[in-house]
Length: 75
Image (cartoon, rainbow, N blue to C red; front, top):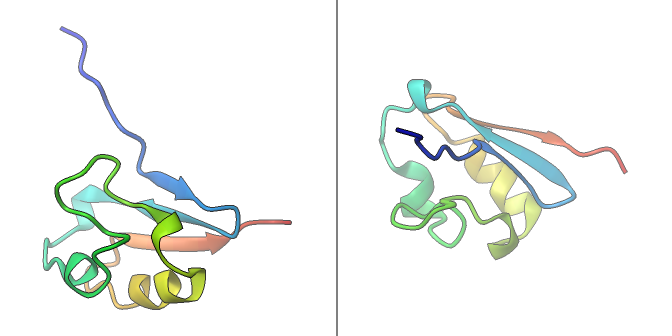
């Protein structure tokens, strides 16, 4: 049986966000504080077009487990 997998890397042209599921403690801090970007009921669950990059970066820095990370894209 073939399972469909989803990438855990997302980009908006300014930043690339990575998610490491094994690190996640499911505190849902990201979804509670920036639910337009970090959605728990939709795949793909991260929508980087839903907020300004600076707000996304600020929220990622609040991730208690370090499961969310980002890097700035080269222009």
